[in-house]
Length: 359
Image 1 (cartoon, rainbow, N blue to C red):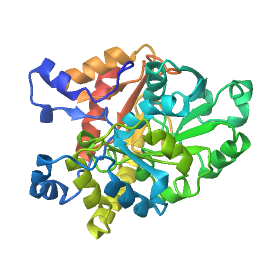
Image 2 (image 1 turned 180 degrees about the vertical axis):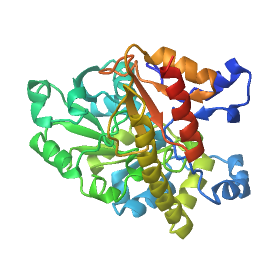
Image 3 (image 1 turned 90 degrees about the vertical axis):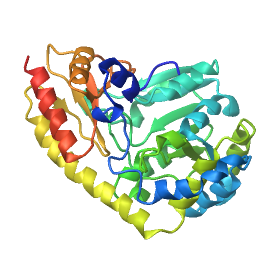
Image 4 (image 1 turned 180 degrees about the horizontal axis):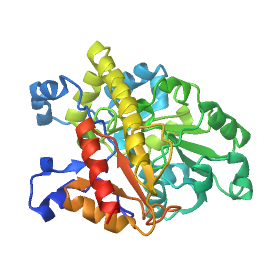
């Protein structure tokens, strides 16, 4: 890790001398309802699986995911979270220069840097609510061979129509487009936006199970792409990348199961309701600018003279953790990100934030 992440709940708990569950973590973009019903019990019954090595290539999990998204299994690769796949991409694609649509998740940059690959940012504009106008990329795109796009984007919450991304990738068939759909399961009718099933040959799609099912500790990620691209990625994959408990979770979560379907639907309803309520509460705080979000987190611009490090520090003293966005390229110490949780947690967060900004 080079640039840093949110979710440092253990460090905060240690510094405050309190248990982890005493902290309201609104810095990590995971499902407030998860894990899904029955998953922990299922894994408890299958604990003996850790006595033996998992499948070397996670073949059963690949086939299960491929069936779940209705694509051939030779178009899918499993990894130890999407992070492992992101860090392998520059080597597998032999990238010379990457273009990153930002501000966005730092691991695209970090993965390139760790592989000694140069990268450049094309930054969307605050004045346009960080919505990308791909026609304005201009000459920046010409020398690049790999393009990273997060959709919906972290931390801005911007969602781009799938057809717009298809058109972009078809316009530049000589370039590889990496589209990270880790937060798309939180969106209503994700199939409308996804490139997973209808995907140009030069597009690789990333999918995370960590966020929607709140199982980040299991490290489960998938990549979908043209068989030739997947084969190149496989040559850079580590054996036994997906551990035995993760493989059990994949089988449980992706097999036809009405309770899991209801869980996902309930999650989308909850986030929709909480998004509306949180928008009202945050918008009522003087000076704050709240950016529209398609998913379960908000990018917030702080009013003068407040700065993110101090605001985050004072919220942490109140046992509330939010994401300082100062280290996102294209943002500054004027921005924080707040992830939605339960109604009670969201109210505590906005009340505390209002108090911090009032002094």
